[in-house]
Image (tube, rainbow, N blue to C red; front, side, top):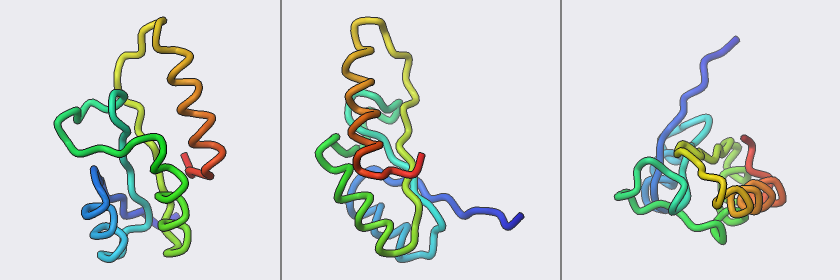
Length: 91
């Protein structure tokens, strides 16, 4: 199996840089549900545009949800996951 070159990104500049540099995939977070809270981060509204841009360039896109999710946030996280699925985020 061929290794995958995975690039982190936190805004459009770093996403495009990863794609332009030849990454096989990029990973990113969205505001509120990302440990890198001080990074620019994307909003859920960006998901379709991220997916379109990456897939047009034959790059996979992975949404990172790497925080502790509390019970009162479950509906919001479920909504975010549904938006990611609808936008065809790869993982």
